[in-house]
Amino acid sequence: MSLALWTNCQAATMDAPAARPYGLIEEAALVVEGDRLAWVGPRDDLPDDLLERCEITHDGGGALVTPGLIDCHTHLVWGGNRAQEFEQRLLGASYEDIARAGGGIASTVRATRAASDDELFESAARRLQALREDGVTTVEIKSGYGLSLAHEARCLRVARRLGAGEGVSVRTTFLGAHAVPPEFTGRPDAYIDEVVAMLPALQAEGLVDAVDAFCERIGFSREQTERVFVAARAAGLPVKLHAEQLSDMDGAALAAGHQALSCDHLEWLSEAGAQAMARAGTVAVLLPGAYYFLRETKLPPIDLLRRLGVPMAVSTDCNPGTSPCTSLLLMLNMACTLFRLTPEEALAGATREAARALGLADRGRLAAGLRADFVLWDVAHPAELCYAIGARPCRATVFEGVLR
Ligand code: DI6
Ligand code: FE
Image (tube, rainbow, N blue to C red; front, side, top):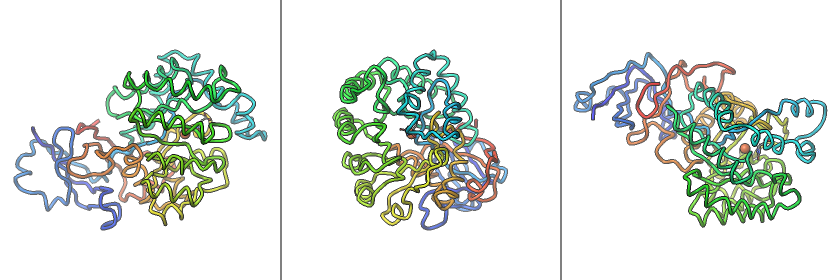
């Protein structure tokens, strides 16, 4: 197979970061073989025999190269929008008030069920395009606005169809336990039975890479969440959890007990919950967009997570109710300004640690053997990716070895 060489670039490999910040290589070379990286290192160290086999040479034009960004928590497929609830909140209603009055997630469920497959696809494709223009090459997409077998399947098929397009890899997560649908009002346990019953059919159709739930006062209890996890684990699927977003439900420890890939949000995470995550190797997915949009004041316990060595990822949580955001770079900025992550932690959170939050060992760093998914940025230093607000520094992406 022919090899392609990329030179005249600097690379933030995000590999072995302790040795060099960002794993930075100032005069880098990357060798691509098919859809994989065959070699990454300082240009001067490139072995002659490898150089001779390179049939194509790409000039990086002085760009900074990073791994393709990974948005590891989105609810990208939905109908309608919630701008009017945004107005209500500005007039004083809280997110929980609106949810209890039949708005919130339930209003998006109505709009999603009413939308055609093509309408769902087109609106999600626009959001996905915006993410891609910010350097995203892998995106996780959750269901959770259909809440019946037919509508959850429809949304997950739309997600798969988005991934069948060019230039982006999609991972799907079944979030049937997002809210109680109208048919089950007042009967959350019966709805959890239904969620458990939906799983085999969705899995058989190849629509599920992981299973998530919303453990919250306005979502599901610990016991209900656990029933979903037991079913997922019995089916051989990894789990993750919307945990401790609005209150401490002790969900993180529950999820960690089921070897969760990630716990997400975590503003109300306790020390015991963080310890359980550390023991299980569960990633903390930080979602500064939702924190900002809901004007939360309680910060996730970043120092505690750092002290315990819990890996931290950063994601958009792109959804119509709490984070209508399609810029992962903006989330990196907010992770630094609002949550006080360092720019290196934030960038690792959208590359190396985001890959870990999805259970993907083949991406998130620039290293031989991994997927050749990378971004060429018009910046001189990786901190600029976190520093600027609204800059569009993504010059080009390479996906599976091909320049897009
Ligand atoms: N937490 C969130 O922030 C989103 N889902 C969840 O469980 C919000 C979903 C929505 O309001 O539509
Ligand atoms: Fe979410």
